[in-house]
Length: 512
Image (cartoon, rainbow, N blue to C red; front, side, top):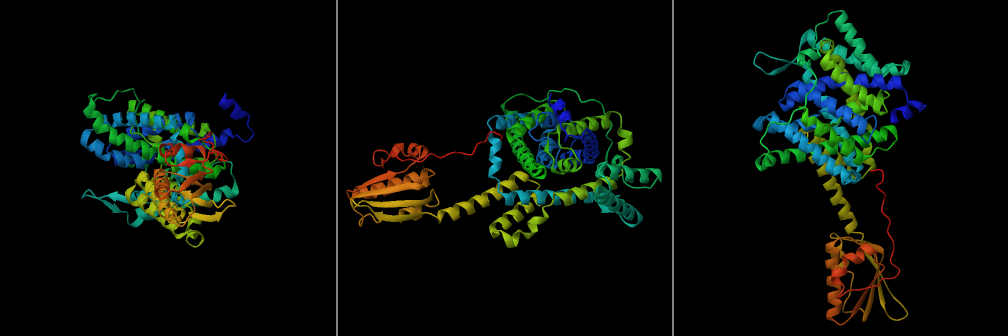
């Protein structure tokens, strides 16, 4: 029914969906192969992962048009697991990774992606753009007799550079002439036709590895099912699950911005979990959303689920019946395509941030980008960025706690508190009160404030105790219901005004 409704939609373009899906499938091949080799597994494992992840997330995911597959972020995590324990433990880790992601989605924890500041988002996409660009440089190298990679020289380098530039030129200028065919697909076809037609010697997909294979088969990981195995697998599964979801949800946010629509983070989390769970039972290495492929898809006109389904099915057909043809595709065309993806991914507007935003935000952006580039650990990069931003936020709000003081007609002193009361502001808060100079009755008004955490409760306890020691009474006024609940344990010494308490409304996470 969903597909039928899409076909009725005037904005839905089946041709663009199919062609963009084919473009993505061609670009998926070398990346899946490369990430497999990084992880220390056979290329078919990466290709099968790309198929299952791409297909299942396209059908079940919360962001139509987003592409998932085997990724470098996951490959980096599993290198040591494969090296120490073998590929069967990897399959088990991927299954458990899927379970963890499904639990996170079911608990609706995907909404916490809202806590990622925009500066962290900029650092994330800029770091990934650099990673995508740098990853292509290996295609300009050749294996020497000593077993190390050496840069191409002479005519081979000129041929490679020439066709990379030609690919980039076609992708850039063709949309100005016509949008009947995705520029990326047209560039791959034209460059491939020239190189194959004139028998020009240059590196091809087949030079990296063979992609020929059969249908993936169901396989229960051949490992002992005991506590020792769980202790080995669980740490890797947890890291893979978190890294995969962070990259997927940040990619979702990027595609949301590109398409000016809103995806469903929790639904995507569950879809990623289901995909990885199935992937582990069919000999896959696991993965997540791919920002580069997603941008290729969206830029080529793929906005619905069909493009992702076409990409996944086409990739499997390449493995089954089209390997000999796809292996002839020149790497120059795919490198040129990925260079354009890197250029499109980079937030060039962020270069002007230094003058227009607080320096802390610019430092966060640079830090996240550098960690992403040098360590390829997106979870750590984003976590560092969020922590720095949170500390900055806490410090700024700690300085905003204020108290306006006045006496009413009965001689009662009122302290009207402004700003949040939390661990960072309790010190300044306690300095506001003149216990020995104040009258016998004091009212602390929280209409413009909020009791946030346990440190705030302790601060209130200390203030009331100070007044109690000198025989003075303290009333707390305008506390919300949640603040009163936090103060229940202190009710013996704190007199709470239960009237005129404000009602706070929370942002709905219905679409998260």
